[in-house]
Length: 114
Image (cartoon, rainbow, N blue to C red):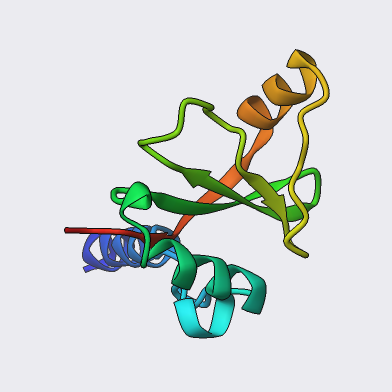
């Protein structure tokens, strides 16, 4: 009897200890996207040159940044904006490498699907 109680307590501890946190709400485009970005997405969605484009949000250096992955562009990582919609200019290779190495929490904000 004591053995069954002991095994039950261990199983209960394993089940509750492995439970995922569910307090984080999923990304909501309407609620979580800045107005400047919605305007830019509206313009892009009307231009065939942006077909296949994806917009990602990352945390980098303590702030949200937005990266536009544009398949038709010849410039990788040239469209990165801060949370106020100001384009980030990578002034040197080290700054770009820092972005690539240290960006966190990728969220797909928008993509132009067929």
